[in-house]
Length: 421
Ligand code: GP9
Ligand code: MN
Image (tube, rainbow, N blue to C red; front, side, top):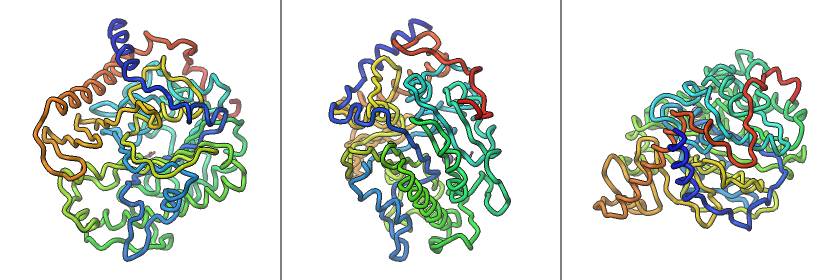
């Protein structure tokens, strides 16, 4: 096992992408605010329903130079859905091929973002309007080193303000504000939203846009809850600006995974006005990624990447060296970033090739292409990334490897009474 980890450390070091000096440390000491956008897919950006924007606020951010907007960014989750997205962005390790690492591997040793930043004086916190045991969060967050976890017990979960997965986004953000205000700075925080969750049902009094008209109910409703989530986000940004947090925080918004599954390709063909097959469905796995880094000029960035790449990207912006850490993604802003996006089932997308179930397509045209040696090599690399990551998680291999300068955390030091930090 220690030979395994040595081999894997060699591999991740060989994959390591040097930070771009233009961005490295540009946000040193700044707060971090992650906004986990439930089920938000990238096709919504600038999409018009009956001539009306569905997500006008997100659209305005995507077009603003205050934000880096990545339009070729993909979710990479498996069965663990939300928990896989979180697992990737806290560890730069892939979720598992089956089940959720959050529930099956909560006793592992991790070298996660909250622990790394904790050593640099950050206080970490998760805000989520659902109960702490969902996805086993109360246990895994201790292994990741989260100092505080504000779950449903900290919110007013009255019937009108909740849906099946928890608190609606507007009251969620509102009630989070006083708790966020009390958080010592610099902080590393994550807000996990839920109102835009399958099956996208919402009290019609709260809607400001009609449903779509494909006849497929969950697809049609998807646009109403997306609009509501967009409005909630806008309200939260008003607070962020007024409080001054906007100017001293890196704000990262990401879609956690698809909201409309492959079982709805017929309806999606109507939504997009073009036939949606296997190839188009793979392209639809894009989720929005928007990063506000104060002082850094934004704009649209076409780099291909996925959720596995978020952690090194953020660490480098904060001026934290990642070379000694076992991470399977690479900094999206690095010139050496690998534009290879493996999906959990071994399919992958690059700027030129889309691989689906043993078939290859030209990513730009959707035309079928023959397998070449280069494509085969890319496929091997995608598989290797997934397999090595699985070895680390299944074998709990990080317990045999402590990066230079990192002090392992003790999960038993953490509790979520949230009184002391
Ligand atoms: C609930 C939530 C939903 O707490 O985060 O998770 P999902 O069903 O999207 O995996
Ligand atoms: Mn989710």
